[in-house]
Amino acid sequence: MKRGGGLFKVPASVVDFDDDYFNEKGKASYHTVSFIKFKPGKKEQATEFALKNFLPVSRTVVSSVIPMISIAGGWDHIVFKKMPNGIVDPESNNMSKPWSEEFIKQQGNEEKAAQAMKFWNNNLLQEKVTEIAKALWEK
Image (cartoon, rainbow, N blue to C red):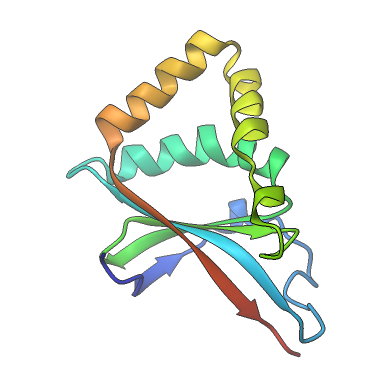
């Protein structure tokens, strides 16, 4: 696996968390972190596609989402999604079904959603690895 290091930007237009997001009063919070590599020459198109099609869905289903766009490094895109229930019960954080349902709703119907996912998987996505990260923030 490639390392997650690099230089990333978070566009101001996609930051939507509260000012106290990082203030967990010294308690750990957990996040799924998806490391994404796009097919050669597809970074700009794939980033636009993800921000337009996936970010609104994730924001509806997950409490907070932080997309990071690569300026330099081994990955093109990294996405942090907060796990509201931590790691005590990982299945309670499984958003696959609600995410799919919301994606279908936002795409208009199941066929359009399937076409969008097929386009993403076949034309834009080269590799994706998801891990769990622990964050400990103190003020």
